[in-house]
Length: 128
Image (tube, rainbow, N blue to C red; front, side, top):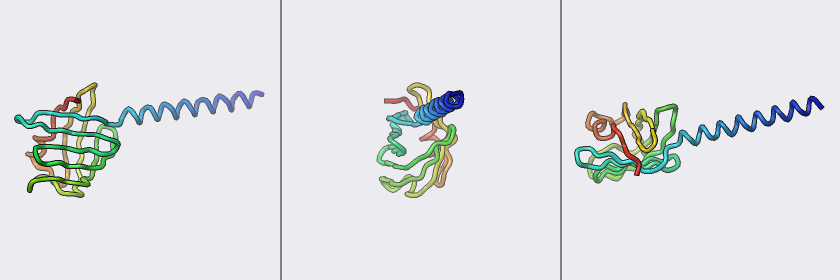
């Protein structure tokens, strides 16, 4: 009888721990559309599942991403551009923080990242 009670308690603890872990994972997912203004031009980030689409003027960059703590790592899978912007298969990362309806992006790094790219992408985005 005592063994079955302990077994039941152990099972309940495992289920509770698993549920808490799943809740924590879902809280770390980014989703929705975030926009910021850069010198009168909208910069848009759209998060859906594990895909990120960034739109600036006529440049549209789509990538797949993963999260590790407060860092987003991504590989560009598609680029629609007018002779500028990054290339397909370029890698990039940035630090982020999400507070309510604001996304803060900083420390942009990657294959084709220059100072102009950092100036355009880094900053505070508002959720739409």
